Length: 609
Image 1 (cartoon, rainbow, N blue to C red):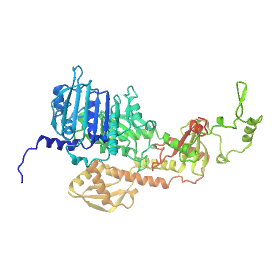
Image 2: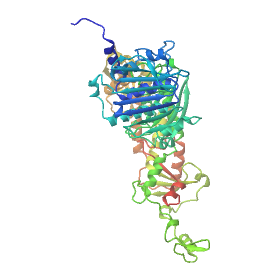
Image 3: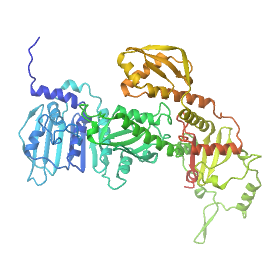
Image 4: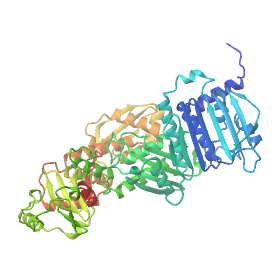
């Protein structure tokens, strides 16, 4: 065996670079975080070749003097831990590894000028070799250029993706950092991309405007503001409506103390908050910020600082789930604008949402003659009394068959002012048409009633507990000792969900009762799944989710079916109950239960707008 020896600095830096500098986007993240920590109000990012050929980040921050610049490219040198307290990190960067790691695998140039300095300074590091600090023409702030990334470690280049993919990853990194700092102006440009610019936003709606800039106005219009707190932990931002979901989790932006993160606890909590309101293959959209005491979160658990560890993850998870579920319940009758747009598209000639030219009688060659300045202009004159005759013809015609009900009573004016309006008709024995003060509502009667039944089942379970079935002979499930210990610790919580277990020696548990809703269940598999979930997430939601799925199935089979003809009072009763039921905007499978069209939407269909 070879003798133990200490590695050279160059090798040490390249090893560190392997942890910190994973790809060009990692470099951009580190450099932009440094600019934000330096108090920048304007940050410009320029790339070429997907960041492999060039990355240049320019800011107007406080800059550095000669001593700071010389130390900045040394390992473990930082200005962001003044007290050396790793438990109270209030900055984005703090390790002091980014710049020397980048300089070890690329050609690094840093030009900087502090406020009041007579001139700028520059230092160059290429493949780990440092040149002396020299004067440079530079305005206040810092400019960092990284050229030929991984030229000193060519093997790493093989693992990079195409220039387009790397450029896209850089864009995503800058987008997340721009969301975290709405007061900072960002510019992203280069030969490998279309330029993007997000101006600085100020004022009480700065965050909302920045979210509209970065994520899109459509998301802002289909999202509700979240503002909640629990035990000095604050949650804010925007969460999308359940009716405005996405096919992937790409539009989930989570921040902890201003730091973009991809934390499993937070992403799991977000998913759990929406699990009753969206389809399983859909994902919510959200931009959420968690602010708490730095001592309550460890951001030093990942080399790229992408993960965090909370001192009390259950508290954070509970805050997020509770706040979002309250939002969903509060906005159950707010359909997404996308749903109305899709409905309008389906009504247009050709359907499918394709844009069609508006048909407006005012530009028709057959419109009546108009007199302008005493002269009649284009159009075919209508016969005298044409309008009165047409109106009389309509008045003499029977009411539309869809609204023909022998027992239909007059519409109550107070119902028109309700969120779902007054029922006026039933189409194809499946859809209810309701009139509101400013439009119409189309309701899927089966989807709506399915949600009502499901919520009643859950409420009954919460009120009376979960019915259980006692096993004639307790089932003994053998498990590792640590899994047994964890399960026994959750015994009370599991009993509340209908699963009664107790320890059976050091390596097994005895299952005495199971939830009656599950019928004949493989108790061993259920217990092992719960043990795995508790070990990974320190919670036992799998059983509750399973009970919810059973309740959803029961609700589906026990609801008003499509094809059943409803009386007017039944339709109105369904609408009123929807207005009082949480989560009634979607069914148990995540489909919308109704679509609202305003008069403005309808007028656009007929070219009136």
